[in-house]
Length: 57
Image (cartoon, rainbow, N blue to C red; front, side, top):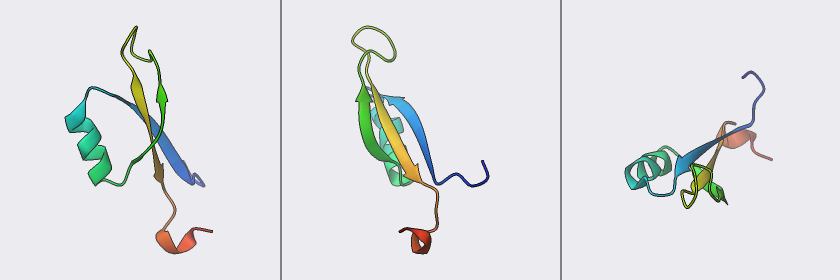
């Protein structure tokens, strides 16, 4: 969206290939949502800054 400074997504804590891909693309862990995908199935919340590097405060 125009003007957005960051994006968030959830990925299964058990999905190592997806987590590795997101990490390679600059996404960083921001938290955990316990039981997000069902009992005992946690999600890792990922965050990515959308601003150009020189625009960070």
